[in-house]
Image (cartoon, rainbow, N blue to C red; front, side, top):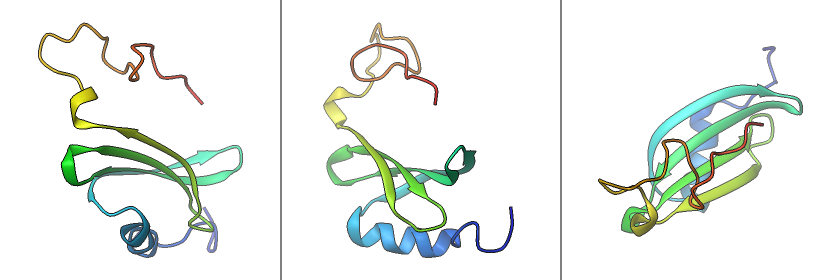
Length: 93
């Protein structure tokens, strides 16, 4: 990574808190074909889990997925780990 390839994480999170408020649970910085991407998981009020993919250079939200509290895995749920809400495994990028 070179200088200018990614905004500082603190700046990205500050922007996100205004548009997507919530408690940060996890952050990853990954290299994609299009450039560096922050993958951020937030827990929002009401128990909604929000997964964001954010362009690290511009801070633009590229993808957003929500899982509400009632749709998350419960004990005894038969969906395999890593399955999305429809029960199918998440597709690799």
